[in-house]
Image (cartoon, rainbow, N blue to C red):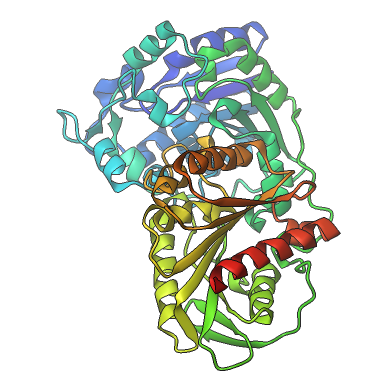
Length: 500
């Protein structure tokens, strides 16, 4: 029979799995709900040296004590960090790893890395009376660690009562992986109340950075649970059934992209001649004919992307295409490589974009008083500062299939400063040109609709260019007359504002 090791989110221990354990045991499975050092009812065992390595060692000992050969190990939230660390050392013992509403940490990632806002990070690191523990959430604060949808008041009180201070080092020590887990089958269980879904995962595999293609391997399966981040308390029967199905190798498989060529390297939908191009630091200038000074459009790519991805976005056909298209219309097309490598990097990426814009404005071939900035996809959050206080020389802001609010599944990973829907009230007379993909994921589409509503309430002019049959990334995915017309219409609108 199958044996399960269950490892819960921060602050909690094995007792949160009680109902799930009872159901799995009734099915004939062997179940080991883990309580790691210092958590749950082991709160008195932690000390200043308790860290992620302590929790990994806890699980290694537990794995060594399980005799059943079919061992499935489940990591919930933070729990996936010690699960991966321990499974990496006992890979030959693990039949499957289950990511329960958890991220995809890599070698060298500390659990705290996804918290971008320094103020939130500092607050979470405030010590308890011991000096080394992070205080557990109050009943009102659990939402910051994941959706509490589905939890009754009694269940929320129970969760709060079972919580213990989290040893600081468990969140700050980097995860150490050797690569031994590459061949171990995995399952992702997505709690959809957080905003993530299998559909979003499919979109990331189809049109996102290449690191997501690993999710389309045949040994990777997915399930959804229509509840919040604590399914062991809000939907224990459904979770137990899902874990049994996962152990049996069931689950939705993601279809890998039909084309071997990664989406970001597919050709732009317009065939444009190569023109003059100049590289300055992280900026490329696609130059029109004539001495100028010319207006300029700065194109800001989406993300996050991996730091080692090559070629970088300014060499992707999509952005080269936009830069050439701008130059063919008599303006300087600017492409930027900014450093949005993770959810915690929006502040750094915003600084990169601001520096790039000032570099462009200082160029004698550019009219510094006629600038437009055009954002794409996950770069949409970077519109925040430009909307909140637009400078007089910013003649237009454009956004194509943008993410205009942190997605619920991102948790506290994004600095809350980056909130375009709140910022748009400060845009005043700044024209906004928004291109909307009709086949956008519901999660992203919702952020766009909320933004449009907020803009209308604030009296901000937003021209929406519709691509009814277009997907996220339609300029490289959907070479249709509809897509061509949308790109031409958006460019014509931006140019009209630049030349007004």
